[in-house]
Length: 243
Image (cartoon, rainbow, N blue to C red; front, side, top):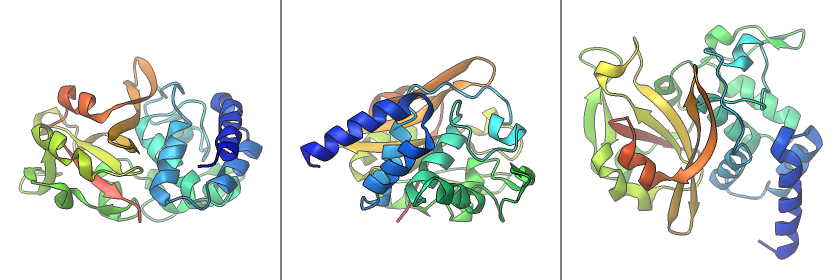
C-alpha cells in the first residue's frame, strides 16, 4: 500500500469510526475495490472495532426491520455486514447483497422495512450449509474431529479446540470462523454458538468479533486468535472462505 493511500484510509477511518456515514463508506468501497475478497471482508470487520454489542435478543436490525444497524452489533450481524460491505460496489449495492445473503431464500422490503426476517439465517450452521457464506474448508486445514450435529445421529466435522494452534498457518484474512458448542450446552437445533472473522497480519492471526452477552452487553474486539482459542468456551471450529 502506498503512503498516500495509507494516509487517505487512515483519515477516512477516523471519520467512519463513530457512525460510518454513507459517503465515507462509498469512498472506502471504491478504494478497496481491487483487494481480495478476504482482505476486504477483514477490513470492514475492523471498522466495527469498539462498536457496542447489540443486547436485543433478536437483534435490533431484526426487531426494527432494518438492513443497516451499525450502531450496535452482535456476532452474526458483524459477519453479515462485513461480507456485504466487501461484496457491495457501493452502500446501496451492499444492501441489495444483504437481501440475498441473510436469508434462506431472499429478503423482501416494503415501505423501507424488511418484512420477512423470519426467513433469515438464525443459526450459524445454516449459514454454512447454505453455501452463501463461502466454501467450507474445515477439513482442508488439518485433522478433524467429530461432533454431534443438529440432532441425535447427525454429525459434523470440526477442528477440535486443542488442535486450533496447529491450523493457524492455514487461515487467511476474511475466513469466517464458526464456533461449535458442546452438545450439552446448546439450545434446540443449535450447533454454532459464536462467529468471528480472521485478520491475518504477516504471521499474526487475529479474530475480530462482537464479544458480549445479550443481557450484559460488550463490544467488538480484535484479539489474537491463539489466545482466545486457548481459553474459549467452545469445543471446536468450522471455517468457511469466500472465493
